Image (cartoon, rainbow, N blue to C red; front, side, top):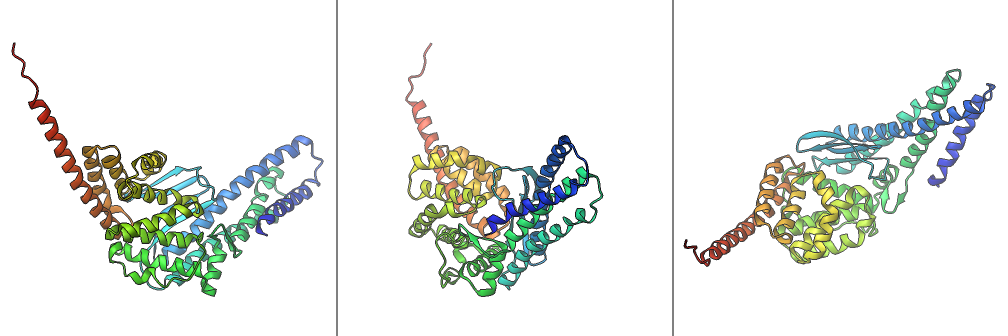
Length: 382
C-alpha cells in the first residue's frame, strides 16, 4: 500500500501549488519556472529528509551504546576509515540513505536497538513538521513557495514508508523492526542477537571464542531475511577462525544462494567472503580471479584489514606473487588497530600471519631456483 501513497501525495502537492498560483494572472513561463522550482524542491527535500532521518538514527544510536562507522544521505557518504573521516559522493546505492554502526556493549540489546531505530522515525517526523512551514506563509514569493512547498509530499511519503511495519524482499522498515521487537518476531530477535555478537567482537573476543549458544536456538526466519543472512556471515567468521573448512563451505553455500537478498551495502562484503573461500578452500582460482576483478573497486575503496586479507590471498595464490603478498600483509598489520571490531581484527592478523609464512616459503623457493639457474650458466671467457 505504501508504494501507492507517493503519487497521491505528489498529486496533493500539485493541487496546493495550483490553488496557490490561481490567485495570480500567471503566464505559461511563470508556471514553467514554478514547475522547475518545485522539481528542485523535491530533490532538495529528499536529500534533507535522508539527512534528518539518518542523523536521528545516529544520535539515538550514539546515546545507546553504538559507535559510528558509515552514513550515507542522498549522494553523500561520510565514512570513518582507519580513524579518519572522509566525505565523498556515492551514486551506486539505490537506497535514499543508510547508517552503519557497531554495538559496543551486549546488555539490553533489544531496547537499545529499538531506541536507535525509533531515532530514524523521529528525525523523519521532525523534518516533515518543518516542511509545513511554507504553508503557513502563502503570501511569500511564488517561486520560493513552489520550491519549499514541494518538500512536504516526498517527506511525508518517506516518513510513512519508514514508519509503516512491512518487509520488502527480506528488508525491514523501521516500523517493522519496532513491531518485531514488540511482538517478539523472528527477524527482530535475530537482529538483537547479532547486536550482542557484534558487541563481543567490539570488546576483543575472537569469533572462534564466541559461545556456540549465540548461534543456536534462534527463531525460524525466512531464508531471505536480511538478519538471518547476516547471522550466516558471523557463522562463517567463526568457522574461518576455527579452521573448520566444512563449516565454511556450508556457510558460503548459503551466502551464495541468498546474497542478492541483502541490501546493496552488504552485497560486496559478502562476495569477498565467497571469493576468499574459492581461493583458499575450494581452490577454484579461475572463478576467484573473475570475482576479484569485479570486487577490486570495492576492495580499493576501503583498505581495512579484512579487505587487505582478501587481496593478500589473491596475490599469493592466484597471482603467485609472494613478495607482493608480504607487502600487503605488512599494510594490513598497520591498519588492523583501527578496525571497529578488534575481535575480527585479531582473527584477520592470525590469517595474515599464516599466509605470510606460506609467502616467505614461496619467496625462498623462488630465490633458490633463481640462484640454481644462474649456477648452471656457462661462465663467459673472453
